[in-house]
Image 1: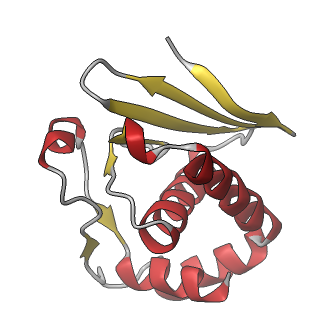
Image 2: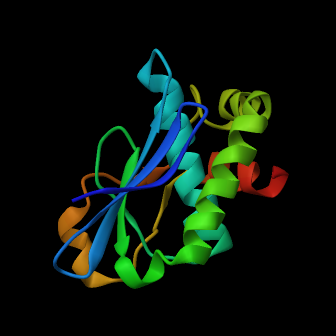
Length: 142
């Protein structure tokens, strides 16, 4: 069973608690193409969980709009931080696109970001978080 964490202005954050002590978090945006959803997703989760809160997570969908974390890590503080970062990223979408053009698109891969040290999350991991330089630059500019 899922629950909404946030639902405003066409932005949705849902959580899907699992029986193994983890929860899947999904971001949904009302964009016409997957490009923006993917760019927002990878950036929002990285800044909120990796940079600001140091929460282990794995990407659980190839669209980068779903991740899995420990349920105990996704407390009220983490939920509020995720919402705040989502709103900051949306407010700074021009900066996000500019950083992507400079550090991500048509650039050599700057490496993966290891976002997880918690073994039980690995079974949910479907892909790596790439674009380390891009993500670092966005985090510095927020």
